[in-house]
Length: 229
Image 1 (cartoon, rainbow, N blue to C red):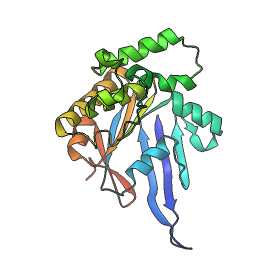
Image 2 (cartoon, rainbow, N blue to C red):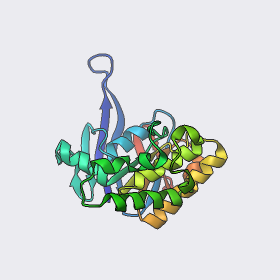
Image 3 (cartoon, rainbow, N blue to C red):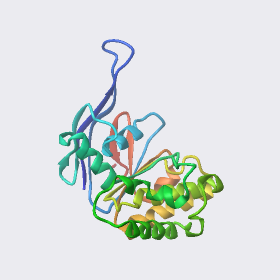
């Protein structure tokens, strides 16, 4: 499903010869339907790695393959289509539109989709997801009328509305209290299992990582499986 081959990422420093290598030859292969959590200290490059996997950022070197397709070989239009249809994104900040209702926010990713689904089918999908995340009775509300945990649940539903193959979550509970964080973690596990979507999450929370899936650690630009000695 997802394969990284010798992926590196450099950031330019303040002068010549001061580039900083954040990712150092990352190799990673994740099968379809698997749930993986990447942990590491702040500034270790976790979000950078996730953005590269999702095509939001480009590696300095190496390959990123999604279902065997090298993302670097796609045109801008093709890459945008992949991000919209094949990948769902959940961020620490939900980025909901305050002027739109909960249902309208969930439907936003479908506006750029032209896959033949009717507006009725899309609405039914969105309503079903809101029911799954426990917010069907809040469809007409706006984000300002919801709690932080409820807004993040809306973001989860929005990420899944186009039935993506891959779900990427960047610190999905970073701004939530412990009880709400546990609820979001359990929701992600359930959706990974029931929807069959491949899940990759990054977090600094060891507790969250242990609840979601297989744990890998990014430290010093190198990625290692926690199960390895």
